[in-house]
Length: 187
Image (cartoon, rainbow, N blue to C red; front, top):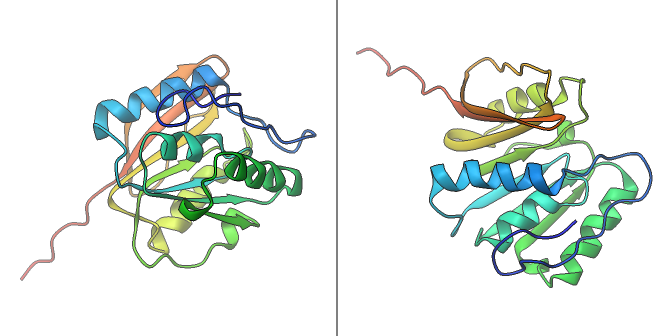
């Protein structure tokens, strides 16, 4: 596993040991970031959350491309160790916040993130449940881009969100979602 582009292009990343996580394949990451670049233009100054983070490859890729900061949430102890080792190897500690625990245990956000990346275990629906909860807790606003990786056969649906785009890459599917704007209050 390597960083694909940006400041740390070509740098190797440590994968978590064991079977607790499923690292996103380089080809899938490349497709995801291509989809995001065509919509965002660049990552400069973005606040990113990498949830179900595994090795942290998605968030570190965003940082390499210019994101301001990234919060990583992961509950598998081996994966948390890999995230911390990867952050240390890239000397990215000042721009990173690692939360060892379940995504579902995250509390309210002070302000919405610009980009939320989710790579939950396939076939569990955990990503959709997390998106719904995080939207209610202020992590996801109307300007937030949400990228969800699922198995290619899954059809993710989240109440209050539109599917902006989706693409199958091997066994994976990447779905970009946007929060449906709230209807203006009638006077």
